Image (cartoon, helix red, strand yellow):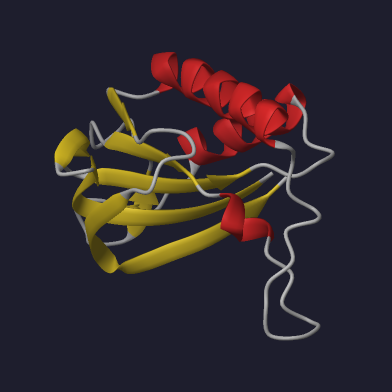
Amino acid sequence: MKIVLQRVSQASVTVEGTELGSIGNGYVLLLGVGENDTTEHADQLLAKISKLRIFADENGKTNVNISDVQGEVLIISQFTLYADCRKGNRPSFINAADQSTAEELYNYFVSAARPLFKKIACGAFGANMQVALINDGPFTLVLEA
């Protein structure tokens, strides 16, 4: 499982002109599911994400977590995180999970995230989405389990 985490001041996701979700201060999580990923991987990543201290404290130091700032989370499925571009000019997605497995683990991740964060917003699995965000910092991390 791979996640690109971006700390944002705001973000939204739109499909075919309809906004599906939006958040204020918090994280955008771009989530890719690999062929060998499990619910345990999802749980490990959620535990890490919920405890990351990457928000500024009263002294301006990155020292507080998302719960401390009442942050919100936008979760977007993104199988392209498993693109292999080492050969040729067309990415291979052979290491990405099949659609059924990926959707099941994506839904598990979203459900497991709900009790951990103030607000969860999501895109639509498998849809062509437009994600708008203001990356705060910018602060971007890549996490894998």
